[in-house]
Image 1 (cartoon, rainbow, N blue to C red):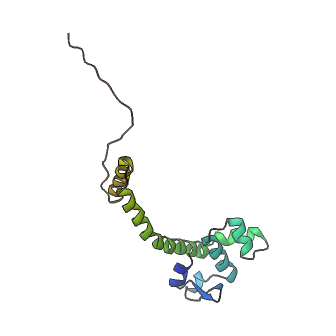
Image 2: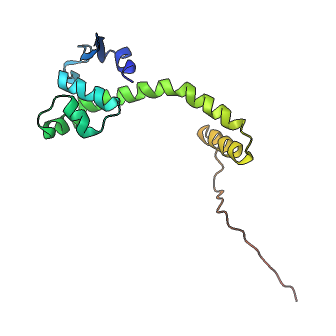
Length: 138
């Protein structure tokens, strides 16, 4: 996941240790602990575990670091970069769903694709209920 941060110049690899490069503006520079916190969060660690792994002795200091704009921006950039790598497999899965043996699965895949393309039917709601109207003319 951190390859995206590396490609964006936020983190650079030295051996197996991730360290922060100085490519961000001074107001956005991360400390070594903040960089480690971002790395742990992007690696999927739970917040408390990420704070501990980053070396914060006081968990409240780690939570404060998570609330800083620079750390939040670094996490968001890393998450976006990771998602870019998932686009290809997601498109492949979509194609597989379109070719499913199940008509229902194919229909739902088609509806999802059309919806994401902005072609969602407006004002049409499928409640799943049937309605029967009887008119008696005397």
